[in-house]
Length: 169
Image (cartoon, rainbow, N blue to C red):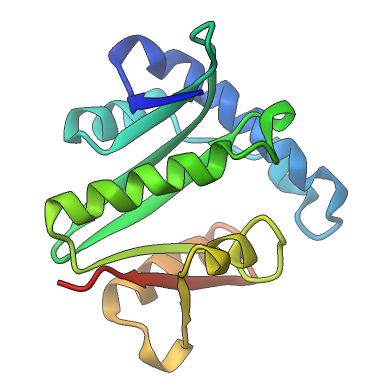
């Protein structure tokens, strides 16, 4: 497996990768609807590629197994999405992509890497916690993270939390 920046020709396959990844929610009754939910569109992916904050994991044959995308927000890099094809989950693809995003944040001099995720889904908050991310208590959320969570709730995403990884700058 190789991690590399997302290229223009990769963009068309990324929505399908995200749809495949979302099938993992089909067995969670309260979140099963996510298996059929909208995914990031081509325009959103194009913006991440243009900003230089999108990466793919590909197999030796060049097939995209997963992607990660983030956006710069003042002193932070905010992880917007990590998606791994359903058949490639549990094989280290997500960990490799996350390492790439952490490395990119450090190279850019970001003070922290933030994200929002489901608090109780094993491959969400517990996965990030094993990587060193800490959950941000509700009363300690800054305006940026509070606003992101509010938008997510407005779109039906409940049970979410914000997490951060301090990068020591």
